[in-house]
Image (cartoon, rainbow, N blue to C red; front, side):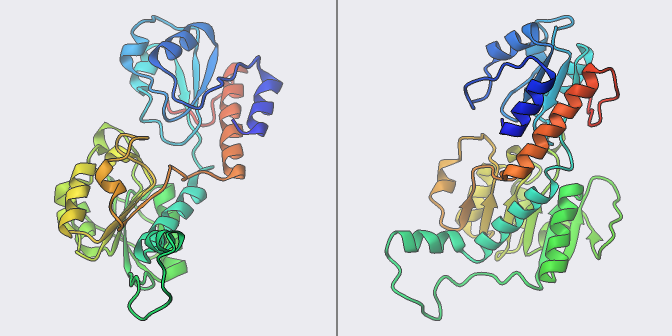
Length: 308
């Protein structure tokens, strides 16, 4: 955990910190539910109904998720076992939107290819047709999921790059900047860049599959900064291989941290190691928000960011 998070936790609680950054195993999670009063978990820690089935009411009554997405936690199972779950919304919005813009620019302007060319010492100098990409200014961006992060991306695109904004959302959404709501198929067909910003979970698994990818324009790119399993990576590989779409920028993966091998070989794909919130101040804000959720619970107050 970031130093300020660790210090804040130790000011309030008796703390045990795992020495590993790898996800907790089912055995470790079972032990944690039996031994501790509260836990701070991250996106790799899979809390399932099967794991909780070992307990009636576990000793651990509070799970503070370090992150906004919580599709790795079976919220309904936690509720049925008397476990409160919280997350850290808000703190991650701008940082994640910035990574979306990074992926958009890197993929559209072929920056990853260019860097690899230079590092391999194969660059022979400027010429008029070298690594020609797509100019983003004035193009159309399609946002899939117009929540906090989706809106932050849309604002950057519209006000920063003069892009037209279209979006798909599960419910009708009104925003305070020019944008048109459409069906997902219409967004895919209209946009030069499609950005996935919808929450993860069973209802959005493989939301972006062959049908959506086939509806996209041949010059269009797909960007995913949400959850990996929202995109069917096999369908994405097929679309990239056949030229149905021009490129993709990914910060998350369907079977994270494993990456579909074919994607690793594709020059038109930008791959980042889940950097969405990876800045010191943002991670510290996330940690402090998680600590505030734990503190509120154990002081008998309303948990500010309770999801269950």
